[in-house]
Image (tube, rainbow, N blue to C red):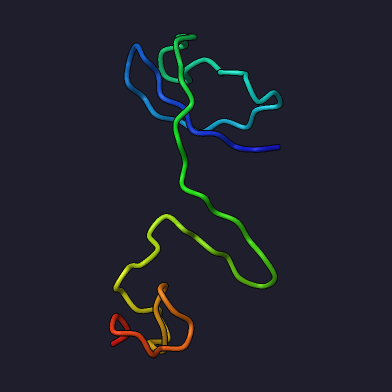
Length: 81
């Protein structure tokens, strides 16, 4: 079951909610308003032993090992430092 991000039209609170029906919009946990809308979320998924986050593809920051960046996996691009 997917977790979606929502925003309340009345108080502006943003929240995440596990929903069972794709078209369901849950009430705001802060003000209990039913005027909520689904937000676009960054794509995240997990494969094999690692996680991929495409929210900041092309980032020039290097990984914790210092051998590659998000733009390549070999450490040979101009962004790797």
